[in-house]
Length: 87
Image 1 (tube, rainbow, N blue to C red):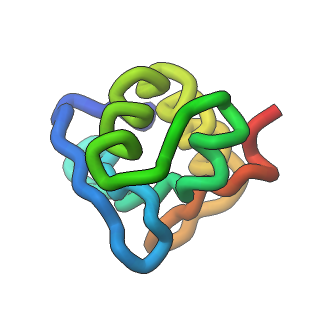
Image 2 (cartoon, rainbow, N blue to C red):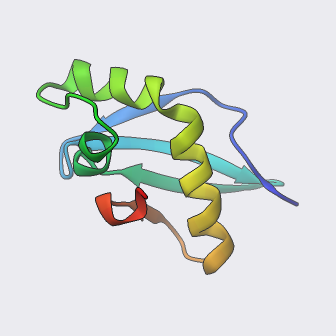
């Protein structure tokens, strides 16, 4: 199966000042976090929780694409998308 993102929910992650979200590969949940630095590299403001979540929403398609690439490289229990993943 391919990685999909049927659930649009996301949450702010205090540890990374980023955003947590879940992908699904069939019945398997795959947790991700995108760091605030990655969102900043994409050109978004991440000065507050609200602006960070808004940045995620605006860049959701790109972030899901980066998540699919990370997931296709190696299977892990969770994934972190960093500024280095933003090309």
